[in-house]
Length: 122
Image (cartoon, rainbow, N blue to C red):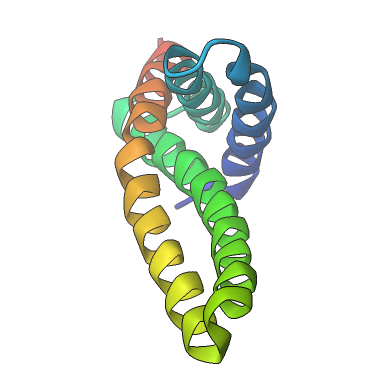
């Protein structure tokens, strides 16, 4: 069963670490995902699998939140540039691409979560 408190902790840690990650682009954002996933996995405990799952969820939730903001921005700017059709395709297209990228980038959070869950189980 999913421990949503652990996912929430991982989400908050990911967002806070992500803000500081702008100082070291690339490496910083991977590190933010690892740290957030580790926090989620450690709070959830239960071993590798449970930590992996909670880290993946924490990273995905953080990414989907960013994707929603990007989709909204795409809708607004698409609407300004191309009317209602531009708004629809700009927002929906950008949102779908951002969700796919989010799921790929959540893998580092899952790895961090697996390590955190494993350490807590020891």
